[in-house]
Amino acid sequence: MSNYDEALERFHLVDLEYAGGLANHGPMGAEALESLGHQAMIPAFVGLYVPRLLPLEIGRVLSEAEAGASLGDPSRRGDFVATYAARVREGDWRAVVASEISQLMPGLFAGAGHGLLRVAHAVRALEREDSDLRRRELAHGLAYWAARFQTLPGLPGSRSAANPIELGAALAEWPLVGEVESRVGFFHRAVGRLENFREFTRMIEAVPLPTTDSLEAYLDELCRTSAMLYVNQPQARIAYVHGLTIPSALRFLLPYLMESEAGLAAAHALAALGALHSMYGDPIAMPEIDEEVIRVSQDWDEIRYHAARSIQEHSIKMTEACWREDRRAPDPIFRRAAADAALRIDGRGQASTC
Image (cartoon, rainbow, N blue to C red; front, side):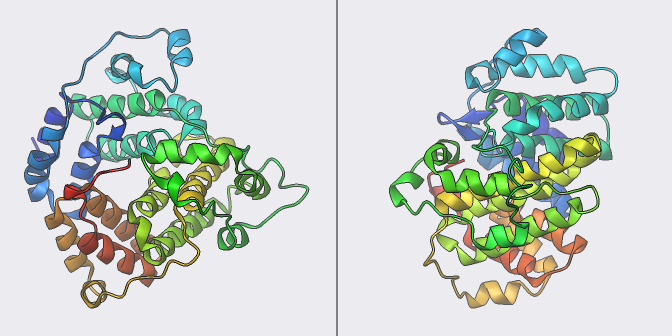
């Protein structure tokens, strides 16, 4: 067994979240370490991460009607694990992914995006090697997405025919709530403030959905903008980690969506980034000048090494996503953001928010 598979064995014994709503990042961090080429660090990462998690209570298989009625109910996460484990155990796991994510995509912000993220990492691992253990990880990811299913205000693109705002212009002038007191607590709770923030809804509905031909460029722009925001808004590093990792991870799931669904899925990723930026963006924030970050940012091997040795889940995931995006569409901003994440994020002694 690989270090990643051994990590899955341990992570499948524990809950999908902890401390009343913090997502279990463990399996995603382990898979990202393997993708970074530093699988040797996985045991240390697991040893640090697992003790914060309580045992998982497995429930019962839900009927289709029960599963639909239970969407967004985190108390049913054990039932969702049992339900999805039964669905992926045999047969074509790809068909299960295609069927389920099309229904779950409107609730993409589930667990601050960690439902989608855990599924995406599981899919990438399954595409490398199909096994019962990796199928079970897919079931855990789908279960978390369903249990924390969360929509954001607005119907993406619904008003774009009358008064369209192009994606680049929208991102440049995105509305900010500007209330420091609203930023306290879990991300998935903080964005509830947006229900009464009409500027957010207006923007989401005014940006046209990407076409099949423009879809990849649309995601490129989301990821590049998120990396720039991460660098320029250092007071909210973790929020902007998710602003980048969500649209980047969505790429793994696009092959399982129909063309008519893919553009809407990308628009939901925009909504996730926009929600985080609206809540945590500061109009007077300034990038931090750190000579060590600038030095390390010149070399991907050194960036990846520092991220792996940090044994910090957000450092690892952000660096891996930036590395992937930079190989796809090279831009120095990805190296700068990754180097900062590798060196400056230290959540081991801090309260988490996601």
